[in-house]
Image (cartoon, rainbow, N blue to C red):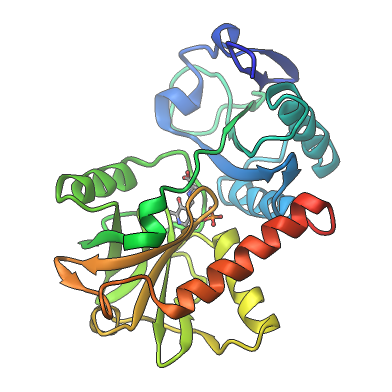
Amino acid sequence: MPDSPIVYLNGKFLPLDQACVPVLDRGFIFGDGVYEVIPAYGGKLFRLAEHLLRLDHSLDGVRTANPLTHAAWEKTLVDLIGKNAGGGNTDQYIYLQVTRGVAKRDHAFPKGVTPTVFAMSNPLPPIPESYAAQGIAAVTLDDIRWKYCHIKAITLLPNILLRQEAVDKGATEAILVRDGEVTEGAASNVFIVKNNTVITPPKSPRLLPGITRDLILELAAQHGIAWREAAISERALREADEVWLTSSTKEIMPVTRLDDARVGNGKPGPMWQRMTTLFQDYKRTLRGGSHA
Ligand code: PDD
């Protein structure tokens, strides 16, 4: 790892401390942009095609053309990992963002601007051992976000306020509830297990279509685990045998305390153990190079 990581900005690789964006960038002024977070295990990008497809959908949602082809993204991200990970052997995660570009401040889209493209790769922090041993605490909070939560927008103020409220209450994550139904976490998707069935809310503009979420449903289907996409009421959440939160950087977190009540028997559950084993097997195969 070089002292100052190498980042990608508008077609160039350069040290992080030399990467600068003009203050009139609409990302800075308006939060007018979208992003992705992509893990790379042993240098292999996790579900790159799916992440790039979600990036396309986010860009469509904010009416911006993708400035790079998928092939160009792949080359850029693979090069970036190679420049930061001692040859690509450590686990990293890519953060990339595309903003509408630099223009005089005006809410309406400026004409003829070039989007700003930024990507960095950082070491992927290990999952705390306490997650498997004890699980995590979560609190339910009112989902105060906008109606386009399927767009991975950089404008994250509600998510930040919600996460901080959870942290202030001694919890790791907030589980958001809109009109009596669970949507997702502040930066994660939600699953429950009830009578050995894995359940997660269906995709809709109320939640981000998580790449980890999709893989979990795929693994369940492949291994004969019952699963369903269905609305989860706040009550069903509280009566669940298990509750999980998933994301690219945190994998599958077992929630064992919810608003100061125990979830199930208060320990990470057997279905969580099983799914985590399948997930780790998947990562091992990815490292070995058999799938993406
Ligand atoms: N966030 N929902 C929200 C609101 C998220 O921000 C995330 C991930 C997810 C899970 O998606 P995925 O499995 O594709 O990571 C769901 C990333 C990790 C972040 O903002 O850092």
